[in-house]
Length: 107
Image (tube, rainbow, N blue to C red):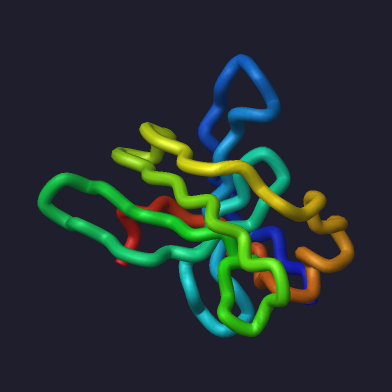
């Protein structure tokens, strides 16, 4: 199911730097950055900071991806590591996401 109700993207000069905040089909906060999908690992409300992990970091994956990133007030502030897998196709992403776009400040 592909729902595009509210589109919230951070407008930046370079398309590769665009942040897209969405929820997974299971309600988990997700981030699409440079074509890669990240899930929310930790949120610190006092500083509006969210820590993200690549979805390929699961223990069930043969080649775990160690990439992590940090956002503060909807801006990328740190990216650690390099992805060891290709960008997921849009059809695979559609199956994983509801595409209900939101800000990380939303409850």
